[in-house]
Length: 264
Image (cartoon, rainbow, N blue to C red; front, side, top):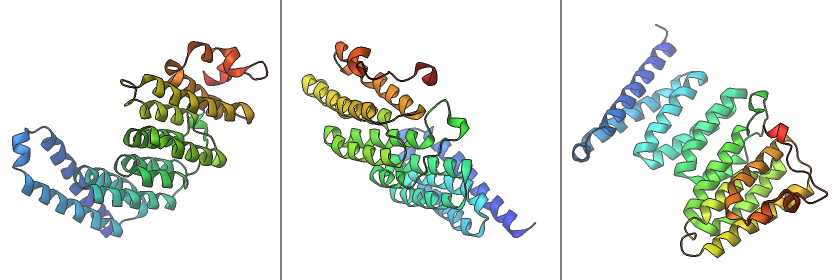
């Protein structure tokens, strides 16, 4: 058997066994979990061995294996999961098209959970391509923006909004303004204030919406911009006064609502 193929199989078997071990462990009782500290060390040792083998593999094989390894590591050691997710993201630039998008989605999904600040930085190195397969929804990058924004908003609360608006403006210059992601973020940010200070929470949502609408109404917007702004409207509608959401109030006589046929 050729050496590269043999190496791929060894690494694949290691990862598969580790996945099965983790699944079995997740179904065990809490008492059993406390008694398996030694098992964790053994799992991490095998996982590290599997990762070390990667450097001997063709790039195509490394995409799949490193994705699995990073996901497993992220469940057991935050530092290792973060490092391997960064490695996976860097590896993605050795390919193109759907494979690059899929690899970056996997890496960023891990980083959004473990290190959202780093994920936010990496968002700017991702392409905002619009292949035909995404003509009925948002591009993958916009989905990641929403995930990262929500994590940061949940962590920092309303204080996160000014920096997220700055990031949204920067992303807008690179491709599309993430109206929907910003809407989800502000709703998540005010959730802690909602029970005790509802007026202040409502004020925060309305101010973000008004600034976003001012941008939308003053700039040219295409299919995805209409889609994103429509998403924002859906998210924040329940937090704004009813009259402010009427078409005549929101869009005014000189502006049109997002094209319903294009958003369907």
